[in-house]
Image (tube, rainbow, N blue to C red; front, side, top):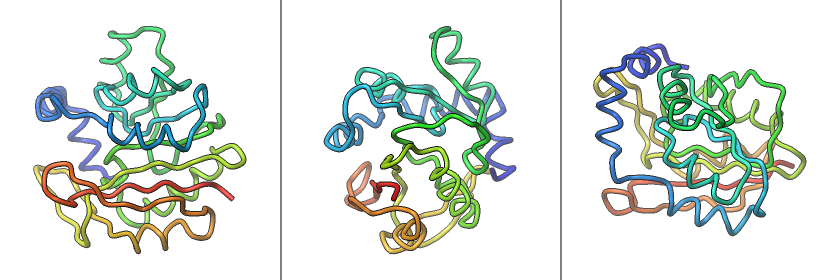
Length: 192
């Protein structure tokens, strides 16, 4: 994963700032969409769980494993829920031998460079059970930028389709609104 992103999310001050910025926002709307494609009790790996808001929502319906490459986020959540199933994982290399019915992320993979994103998508196929699902969201667009030391890559539907078409069947690639009209995009795809 991009070194600047890692430096940012290893600093406790930045983590507190991020938690403050994220206050009042979660992936509940996305998880409602996921419910239409994934059976209750399915195993879900969340990439980049951050403060754990989506992890908790996912855990209401699924057997969920949280992951992050930021040790401070993992340690912080472990204090909240000592029994949580958590993994310290790089979203690019995903070094685990576990498998899941679904891999979920909410605007996490956009921090990877495009070649890292491609590698992550390929590696995710190894971690998915037969017929398993990807469910990822991104900021929509066709650019890259760095803000406050954190890199962001924006995606259009075609970029995402081209990145996954060799390994997955696309179920949905749709735009949605988080802050501004159609500023976001989500992808649901099934492993072949």
